[in-house]
Amino acid sequence: MSTTAQRQVPQPSCPCLNLASARQRIGMTLEQISQATRIAPQYLRAIEAEDFAKVPTGVYATSYIRQYARAIGYSEAALLSQYHTRREQQPPPTDVGPQVPRLTTRLGEAVCEAIGFFRWRSPAKPRAQHPA
Image: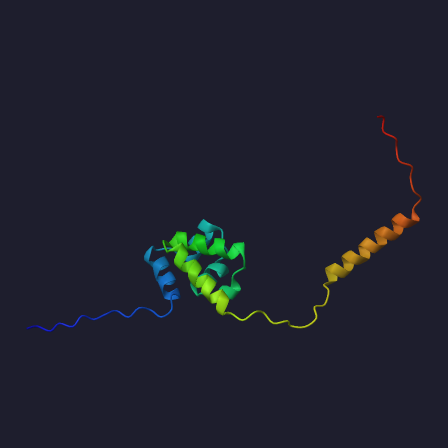
């Protein structure tokens, strides 16, 4: 009686290893996928590392994830499921304090006030009557 033990290959605990290996198996680099999908390489790296906090949220995230999954031949549903699970586990962003208006906002407000002031000071021009 022969007792041959079958060695089971341990499944990687991090599914991101599957993404990188799937991409490498088809012989594509992140730059090639970036050119094909028109997604910035830093977002592709974040998806591959499952660092979804670095990926834009909403429609962009699901679109980027779907396109990446299609490009490497990975299951879109599985990758989107991982994304939604990770997003639910992340704590909501904390308020970092009061936000200071940007210089461009202040400049825009000043320009709008100046235009309003000059319009107020200029004499009103009579409107041309349009023939009926």
